[in-house]
Length: 136
Image (cartoon, rainbow, N blue to C red; front, side, top):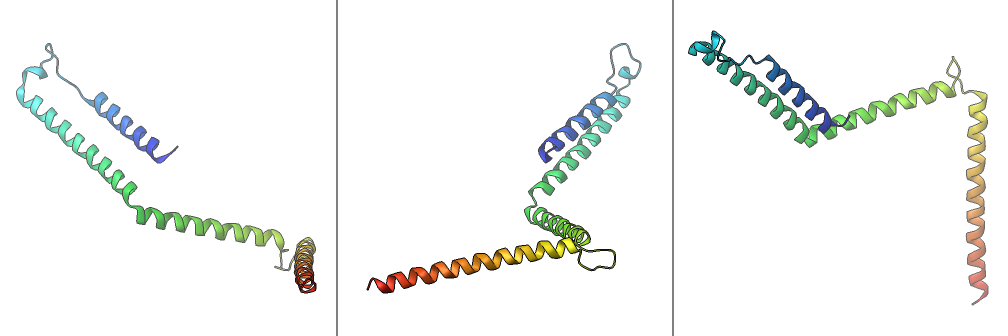
């Protein structure tokens, strides 16, 4: 769920709960005839509304605090990268921490491929420069 959807869902849940909790006096109810109980109910409803509004403002303030959100995202990314590094290292080594033979073979293959690409690139560069010298 996205943050907007979570906020909307939380707000609608709180509003529904507040509406369900409310006991509005009806004409036939004895509480409806007592003005002091109506005042108490209204004051309680106002207080709940203020609390809801304060929570909503706090959530919006958190969303608008870009610096803190960026910092939290950076920390989360750093922790995830460290976890992935540990997982990769554990897969590439045996119980004593020595490199696994498969890892050594794969590393050697990658190194050989890089050297081959480097040699071909240098050779082609050298051939291109020799051709341009011959044409002069």
